Length: 363
Image 1 (cartoon, rainbow, N blue to C red):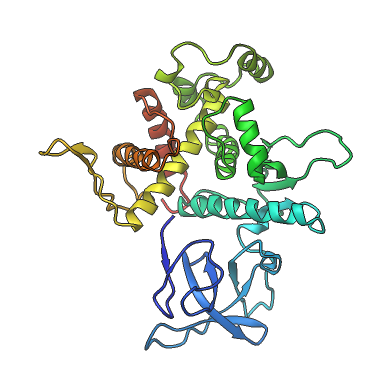
Image 2: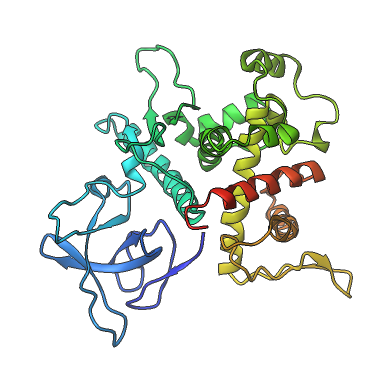
């Protein structure tokens, strides 16, 4: 995720900002332009404030409908010719079900979920991956259900993916419950954004591997996905990961089944490109080799979304995670990235990288 700047006053902006802390103007994210902009009302719509000395922008915009409940800051260009205006932005248009917002707890948790989802969609759009909307003619559009547990004590909502539908349990937005589940399942890492990245990995297995005709090449690295999933799940929770799993997998859960190995590795690929873009925006210098003074340094001065090979990404990522973990330890915190990337995992990351490039809509 890159940093943004208020074009009116020059203040540094973050992706989630809704108001500039310096000039107090309303902010919106313009996804077609990949920019945050200070805007002001113009009748029933909004106009972008001009840069100093620049001519006024004639394009008018509307906020996503979910902006009204503080759950989105994306804007939609007004189509003055057709007279048809979308209600939802390119991120929120993928929602199928949201919880009962009359419940304040549901609203607060859903707002947190939407923050993570927008970060996911930012990355997907930056990677130029196919992202079909519900109602399109695509046989498997990307759809989200955000569901709360039955207050009467019925079945619990399970986060997961099936045929393009990604379900996120509202409880995952509760920090206390999520941490309890992390400890109960003996996981080293569990975040709301991580769930989105993992589950969308299952979706893109369908789109890129299954529908893309790449099952055979997938099986060489990840294994045969035709293995019984239920049996693999039971075996994993009964016996745990196999001995020596760290030599070939990015996480213990990845050992469970080839689909989960793919989804875990996919999630880490999205971790890498998003965080490297942030590092580049911050001007971080972390050389991926030991320099003449025997120190680990690197200069993340590239755009991870633009046509680089996977080795370049990984060679910058590894020392960056060393730096992040060291900083966390200096603050008395656990490692921010508690994972290793053995050679086999790097090969899997390269496979995903090349598959994304192959299927990019702007290749």
